[in-house]
Image (cartoon, rainbow, N blue to C red; front, side):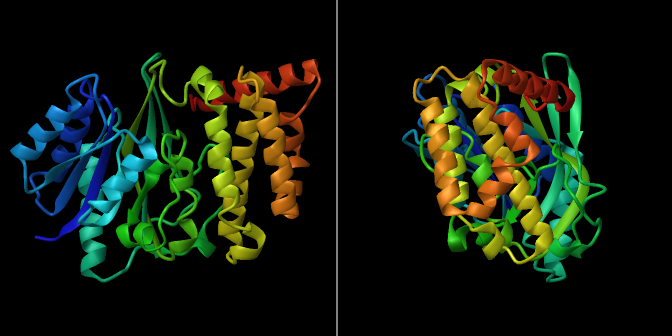
Length: 344
């Protein structure tokens, strides 16, 4: 039987929580064999991740396969999953996260329905939920007032995204061919590549479908998590690397014809530049300021209009105050935003 969707699960020393992730997908599939789960063991050596992956594949060989590779980082694992995908659609679920079974049933039903009708959807969008373990709270990110519901639509029909409503990896389920045909530039041994994954392929997607269900559950709470403030400050070089790849992927004002999509992508890239600016101030890396300054200079040379949009707007000016007092103000505003939107 052909597969309608591949769920890829990048795993790195994930033995403590990968079972929950895998089982949540299986619960939503209700025993269907037209789905595929690709467990990518990214060179795990500190726990039983490789053995667990093999055990799952042996238990359900018609649905699950295990792939082992040398450690290459999250982006490499995502690409390995893509290379092994048999599904018409492709969705990444990180091993410490999970999906809601009821929402998964609805997504699978909608994919089957649209494929049977030959609707040629390129991207399914669903909601995601921040699961904050520290205070046991949830924060749902939905697109109910931004995207049309219950029908296929194009980018010209979307509304304005709030700053907390970006289409992160957790919300996206791409048609596999959209990712394969032109590739996705995910560098090895680099965190935050999910921003590339959630941004670069968007202009290739012509037909979209928004299913207003809370599918993806995004775990927040581990001190070593990549979105932890201290961790992000310590990896500012990788954040800059990812932002540079995004910058060099398009001249947005020339390459993106649909105004609504261009506006969204410009604002997302602006946010990436702001993140680089803020976390440079929090970083103890000796070359952090130099790398940030070079990124701004290179943006100025690569795309003058984008530089003006990012650097001379209110957010750009506020994130790049250079006096000691100014830097404290910038950091305080960032932490206020974090408390309001709870993205860390």
